[in-house]
Structure formats: structure tokens, C-alpha cells
Length: 216
Image (tube, rainbow, N blue to C red; front, side, top):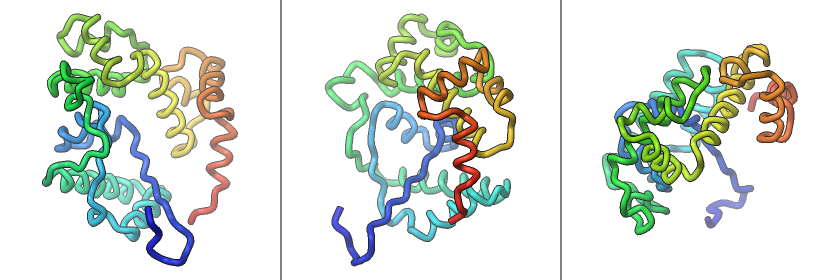
């Protein structure tokens, strides 16, 4: 990227959790493409620096209405992007030689499994429970999941539990023990060990760092 001004370069990242992304309506083609390993470049004209600053302020405001409007605007941006063919920096697995045996229908089965996982993170999950939502043979469904998501289902479930736990720590005052329970960890010691391994610090330290950040 070539700088267009004399000032210091600025980069803004928008992180949308997987469960939020999967439940955004009317963007199924984009959801399927990204879950299939695609990497899409959306037109710069869809989003300005002022818009990103407004979303950041809405997110940090703690106001439920502003947060909901922000999500609706992000959803609308993605829907508008789909009015034209997507510009892929990396094409989805279904469109590559490596994934020639995977169809969009296969990816949709994986989307269904991911949605089931995200809806049930708070309770014990087995591979068979998740695979059952597809109507496919369990072993075949699990193989589809691993091939599409590039990781075994059990590892994916742990990762999603940790991401949800991090979101709860940063966006609420929920007690750490309750966070662990709501995210499906079988014990507090297991939660602490896996959280530290994933993020390099214990939960309370991450929450403390976030609450000390200045609102910019």
C-alpha cells in the first residue's frame, strides 16, 4: 500500500465474532465463501474513515441501541458488497483445484454445524451432536468440517468458547466463574489454563487492561 499523505499511516481493523457474522441475515453467499477459505476485498467506497470512527464510538458507548444500529450498518455494508461479484484475493475452497470435490451444499452443511456449535457453546457438545444437524453420516460430516475449517471440530469448539469468553470479559461485568460456565468450560481451572495458553495472560488481567484503556 502506498501512503497518500505525509502523515503517519493509519490502519483500522473491525473484528466481528463468528457467531455474530453467521447470524447476519441475507449474506449467505459471503458467509459460505469465507467459511470456504475465501479472502474477499470489498470496495473502499463502501466504508469511510468517518464511518469506522462512528462505529468505534458506538461500540465503546455501552448503549444497546447504538450497538444494534452499528451491527445493522455493518450488515448493510456486506449486503451492498454482494450486489456485485466479489473481488477475491484468495478464492474459496469450493472454487479451487484443492476443493473441487466440495460444493456450496457441502459448505452449507458446515455453516449449519458452526451455527449449532455457536448456539450451544454453554453446554457439553459431542462431535455426534453437531454432525446430527446435517443429516449426513457422522464421519462424513466431521470430515467435511475438518476439510473446510482447516481444524478438527473439538479444537474449533474450544477456540469459539475462548473467543466468546474474551468477549464477555471485555463487554460485561460478569464474574469470571460465570463467564467460564456460560462458555461451556467444565471447570474453572480448565478455563484459566486454556485462556492463558490462548491469550498469554489470565482472564482478570485481560479485563483489567481493557478497562484501563482510554476512550479514543
